[in-house]
Length: 262
Image 1 (spheres, rainbow, N blue to C red):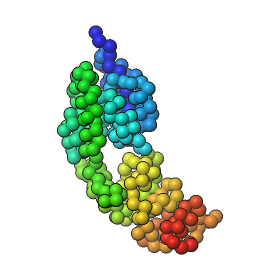
Image 2: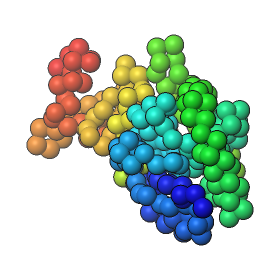
Image 3: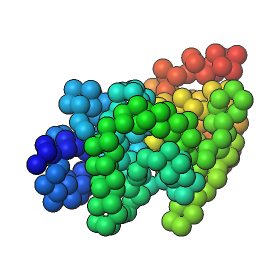
Image 4: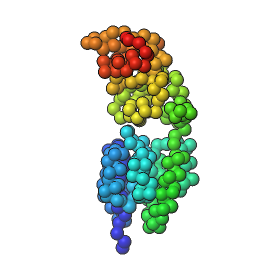
């Protein structure tokens, strides 16, 4: 009997890791060599452990599954079974580039089929072909978001039960951090997406969006006035009366952006 496949589990949800670990434990041809709860730890573990196969969640804060592949490098990345909640649009890229995936929620039969295919890929040993497919996947398997010519995000896709909402960023009033998610405020509605505030900020046009304090970003087009608050802080008053704190450390940056003293 050949040596068991050495598998690394990567998912930021403890329940998901536990479920994958339980399914893998039923297969005598597989040995779990590690678990990671975030992308940074995953990239380090892949380099140090050199697993035969990685079960890789895509939607993780800070460093997502695609970022892990970029960090490690497609040429050094072992075969991957991606775990994703992406919709049909993004999944086409996985099918085109012959990389397997598990679409949450998945059943035992789908998991068994994915693992059978993964074993065949590992045993074939075509790492060069895998690297080429990963490179192509990185270019194609993006959610249907849009960017301006300058590269700034112009549209978000927000998944809802049974549908996806396409939201132009100009509609956003403000954004606040909520653990590993962000809350996007659009009028009276609030949408939650799994993305770190800092990561989202890096994709938004700084001419329109401003980090008011460590936990909030405002759309400057929605700011009606600036009012003094307590202890040297200020408050940004939005068009609907919402108050967003402007910290002292960010006040000077806003003054520089506006070209005047508050």
